Image (cartoon, rainbow, N blue to C red; front, side, top):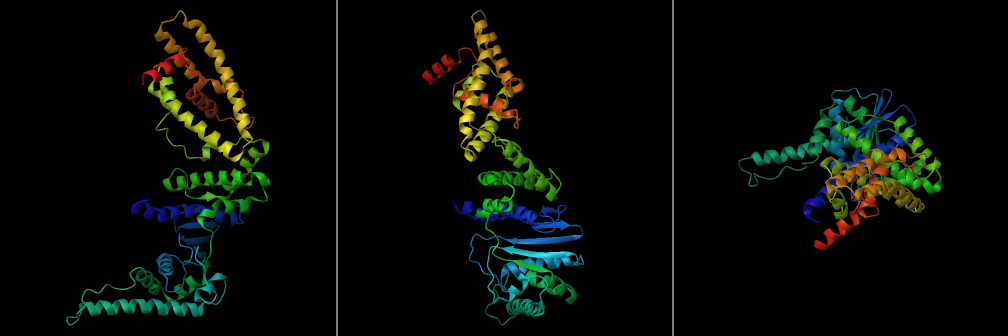
Length: 413
């Protein structure tokens, strides 16, 4: 792994952690009318009527990190919240700092673990610490500016803390007290590699034990998409608890009816950049249009991802899929046999045209004529894409002589 690649891991995990943390918070919110947003007023914000909870997240790959009033992360967070309180009363706000770091009970920050505790001693410590940092920076600055100083270029200390200290001390005493009184410290928060386990714990009473992990993965996939679309403007920024509960209810009902859940809407579908050589040849020998090729490749990757999702999470679907492929092949054979019967008296250009029409049938009509794999699963891309997958292994084809033509091409290559 290159240095640049490795350095990107931390920030990437941090962004992903925000989304999963937001899901956790929404799960834990009692009010069904509550909503949550990512990267609005803070890293994560949950709203419940007039009350807002602002969450600062400090997700670290190093789990042994310790927080204290001398930590950069503490002062960065206090700085962000202090800037916010310059323009807001803050009376209806709760400020939460969540981190994977642990807090020792002897640490002065431990008073923030319980809401409503007396924080006057901590406030004095923070005031003193902020003044100490700014005074030490000012001492070095003055020393650098002194004509007699031999160390005119001494680096100013506390580069990562001083802005937070300044913002905090710039608040009035009343605002500083209000801020400290409304902070909740949430140490030892779950790590990102425990996301599935976290969701499983939240849904354990709503789903059969054997389906728990499958449902958890579906929830995370759906949530990832909603979170990204909220950031890109494809949906509103707020995600409501009712949306989460409705998704869980619908997905749970699908799983209860049978094994075939519709997961494509919740999954990110990549472009098929390297289609199989046989798939390409199947389309080339009928002179398929660019639109037909694009549709073939798009539906194949969708069907492949959906089928892999089923087979990964439900081993018993493998046999059902094999039988369903047999049904697809059988339905295709009726159309294919008719073309073969006509092909003896047709020129090759007409045979290619018939092949393109058969390909179009797999895209536009087959899903209306072929029995669905499940009464609860109606996504037409499964049938469309499965036909493309079958063509890639030469179980079916579009040209009447597809096996011979493709074998001849392979023999020449």
